[in-house]
Length: 416
Image (cartoon, rainbow, N blue to C red; front, side, top):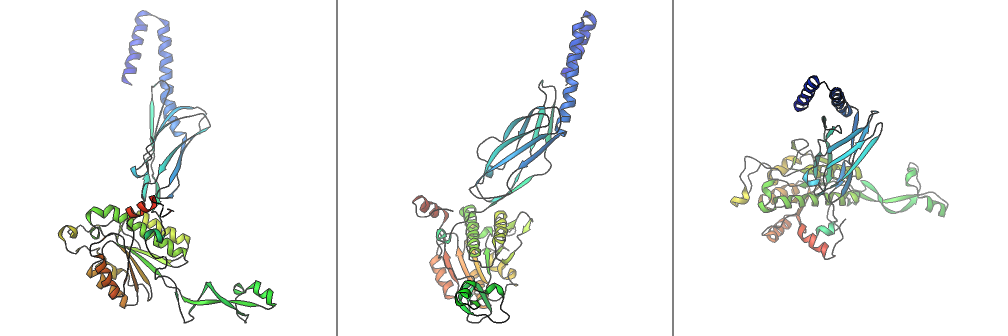
């Protein structure tokens, strides 16, 4: 700007001493363009509406499309706008997120880019920055977005077969000889209609065939809740497998929740991990069923992270049990006091230890059904498994993620 003003002063001095009218004309034209460019450039961004269209949710491995819509409310066009989007590394596809657009008067321009969800997480897009100017380079103006947009990437979900688990794990609704609840999904025959029977249970086709009202009979059952417990204490994982092992544990927990809810069973989620959304403990999700409830579980699993006790030493380096406050054997009993009799605890953990087994044995004696799903290879696993089964605790190993990928390449499994 100072250089331009110095040029105007020099031209004016030349015009005065040389008395050349065309220099005065040049000063008027260039000065007018300069003043108009500064006024229009500052005004153009105030008349520009900016909208970002990005899905708020996606699954790991998906590629999603995003749009930036620029709507010019002014009659004057905007010759150029440079768009710079801030995208986390875990969402980048390798393409440039610096775009350029030209927006006419009373019109809009749309620029598109893609995001690839490399891994689960709770990501922030932005701030979005815009820069515009005039065609002569006299003036520039910038704008920065005040609020960020968030994208939740759900963890990958696989089948129990892909996890190496039996398709019928001992959890969920148990058949009962006592007629406490009737399971409407399990029909056991028909009987004659009696006063007080609900119209919803009338078997209309059988009634029309026998020319009398018949009511469906259902198998008795006890609807028991399964509580998935995800161990994300950092010191429970071997140092070399803390990243990969914890991510695989989240996949296992998400897959178990998906399977249980697909069977119309109630399930909840409890974890000792860190929820960055609340900057502390992850709020437990009570046992319910339904697709909406499943999405709530997946949303928490998308955000939750490994948790480290800053006052504890790393037990994996010293070869002894973790003194961490979040170690499962000491943390779990204080967080499940509200669970009722018959609830199934489905633990997803990388490490099975003697203190954990004794803690689970005490819960088993209180009337809880305890099952453990091991998500990381552990030395001496067979011995710990036999000891757990002697205590009435079922232990199930899973495929490691690298094994699953190798089987997929060999055509053994088809991913979801």
